[in-house]
Image 1 (cartoon, one colour):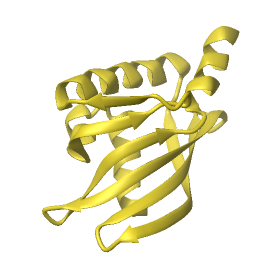
Image 2 (tube, rainbow, N blue to C red; image 1 turned 135 degrees about the vertical axis):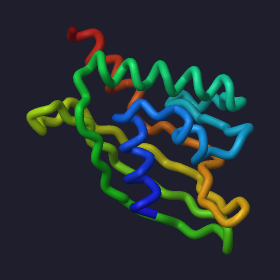
Image 3 (spheres, rainbow, N blue to C red; image 1 turned 30 degrees about the vertical axis):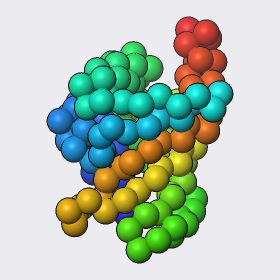
Length: 132
């Protein structure tokens, strides 16, 4: 699981939208901090990923690391994984961190993200953007 998310993190830094989309199962559901559910098609998700990549560049993110906080096995093919992401500048200083939960499943022998639950990233980014 850690290797899966390590490659996922690297793909954002490499601006590899194709790889990013490849780890998701579509349609994918994205749950916001406010509890709203947004269903993403692959095309809409790719546009969102491009916007997120641009945002990371704007914020000066040069490194993305994570810590797996927990993992709950729901069945033989479903898990919920909670990660704390660390977004750092090129000197290694933390710009911000965020907690996200993922519903992960197996599809044709590969791990796929089926849903994302944003815990606090949106509000932390809003604070950063308002300070600049």
